[in-house]
Length: 296
Ligand code: NAD
Image (tube, protein in one colour):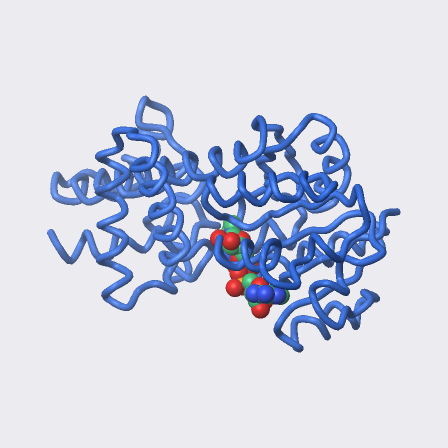
């Protein structure tokens, strides 16, 4: 049993914190939302009065915040949490943020005598609830070893990606690939429609041929072939268009900073941006097929 501070109890953080409690850890939680706090309080978590209180007198801390600016503010801002924690506390930031911020925050944490990993997740709210998330972890070997059992209470696969920032690098590359393969998969179904090829036939063949990919076989963007995919429930998320757009922007920022050539990543970002601007940000990202269908 570890005494853990948990900050950010939203759609993902809420169920993740609950899984830590279920696995016998002791939790001290903080969120700006009183409702989110009460949900965890009713399950036995101690309620902290602010972020600094959540990290004081604990052995480890998990943060699950919306974006890089929130992470920077809470770690490095005036009254940042690093000053309130005991020496040697392990910090695990599971938010999806840019690599540069992850590295900068990791460095400041180590200078303050703490241990830190960036540990973004793959898998949405359903995986957070089921405790089946994949964690991509950046940080030292010793920090990873300490983080592994705690992350293991919230996920199924815990992968050490490399030094500080490597978890976010893995996440941004993976999600750029996901955005691209989803659009490609939608295009294949739309072309099949025009060619008079049944959707189920395309699925049966491509899922056993070289077009096979996760967007097709696990998250199929047309209703029918994969009964659990959001296409079967009017594209209710799942993983929203707004979230995909956020990750594609992070990928493009990283590509620009490093000089990487990513023309399809850039195109995928502009396709999702157009769909988001059309007011569809809350839809599942596989719903992009609706816009492509309309454009045809
Ligand atoms: P969310 O908006 O539901 O939750 C964020 C929570 O952080 C909110 O409850 C908010 O009140 C709280 N918060 C913000 N600033 C705070 C502060 N200063 N102090 C305390 N609490 C604060 O977001 P989410 O869907 O839970 O996503 C969290 C992170 O996980 C994001 O970085 C997102 O990109 C990533 N992610 C989300 C999904 C998904 O499917 N939702 C999947 C993978 C990764």
